[in-house]
Image (cartoon, rainbow, N blue to C red; front, side, top):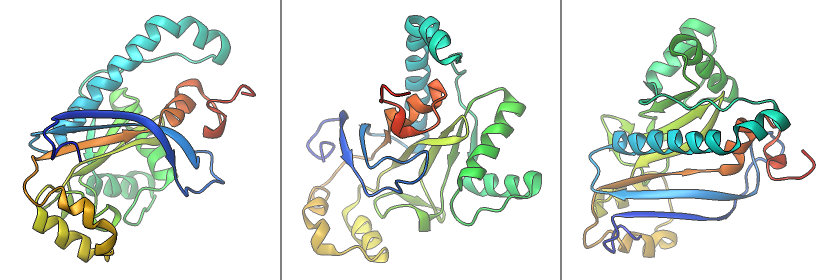
Length: 232
């Protein structure tokens, strides 16, 4: 919403309450989220570039300040990633999993698919991160921009798990409305949302990241709900 008001770079850190699957090691129904949006981008590649630089900076600062304590208490090494991160399209990822690992995912990546992709790029390129981009329209929300039959979106995988979903958003009012109708989204429920785009909005995109899932992977914790718990 701030993009339409003229704020070109916006972030927020705030609570999220979501009806996630609560009986997995990766989902929590209440968590803190870090979200950013950036205006005047050309594609989701611009957002991926911002995030890889951001992640490298975060891990570099954590390593500088807390590497000793993390090694002592969690027996984990902080690896500062090289830039750029590896990238693969969703179509290429599905083909790779099927050909190299005899693993089939339908439309979306399952946890095993994420794990295998990370293992593949760790072995091939020595990198813990991989961007999986250009996802099928069917598994993405109506507000993701589309191009050549795919959404201009991505997931960032780290150590075998998705930690971020990002995308270029659709900013054109009529197209946004049409995509919502195609997804059978009730128009009354998004009426106010759509009005922000009615008189013009710059091309923009962003991502959301859960710090609890990042902490879980960084520290080798077995369950995301224990990431911020003293009983680790």
